[in-house]
Length: 324
Image 1: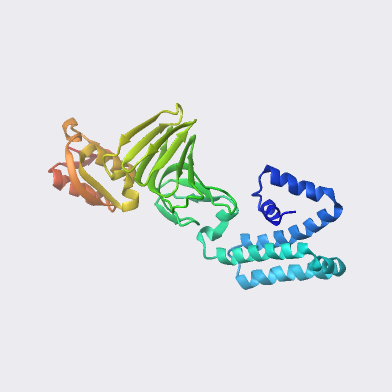
Image 2 (image 1 turned 45 degrees about the horizontal axis):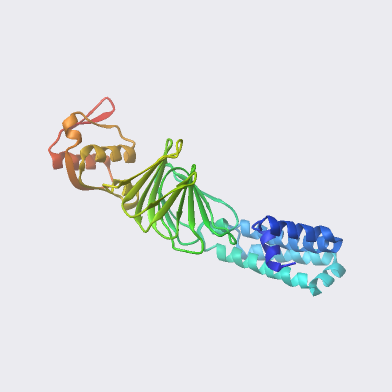
């Protein structure tokens, strides 16, 4: 039995053919099954240590050696034969890998759990900045949820955007593409930075650097910097346009950057960022161009800057903020 196949089987990373081969090998001989159970016991014991990443290292190691010694003491003759076998060397290698990974994982994001299972990241009332195991940086805006995994033997890095919006600065790895699933749309990159937002039945992708491939139901679009793609998740329709402002990036840059954009676009972003209810009373003011940079701080201070910049009047009435 190939050692790599056995390790992949224990990690649940083997494909259907490899899984079948291991299972047939186990079933073919009672001795094979017995040896496999002994190795799996060591693997499971070590995996307990890995999952309990908040446990003190010395305590964890002591627990593992105690379990090991107890196993040997309970069945000395069987384990002496096992210690002399090739399988022991395989089991020892597996144990060393797992324990080393557990110790190393203490210094990794999310304790290295994404190497073995899916990890959930969820922001609520504030944004969240996270670095993934591969060095990719993600900024989650408020009320956003993503799950990701970067399993050891997988040929890609997977992320699922459940809801909300996030900015990805992906660490380049040509051997393992970075794949984001947003409803029915699939976004594939090697190394780039881009924004993804999902709301109602729409997914929006805006590229900052590099290129991004978006696919839905066999149809593909390639996006370059400053290009925006809107995907209708119901119909599969994709519409590509140029992104005309940097407002979408406010939760990453911590600034609202307006460069001769219509006032209504800035107001819409402020409403989203602050959960505010700002209205422009006069139709002619909606397209009024504004150039300014606002810090993502107090809404009242930003409204004062807008008032002074455009010489407008801003009042509060009935729970609304009125610009006139």
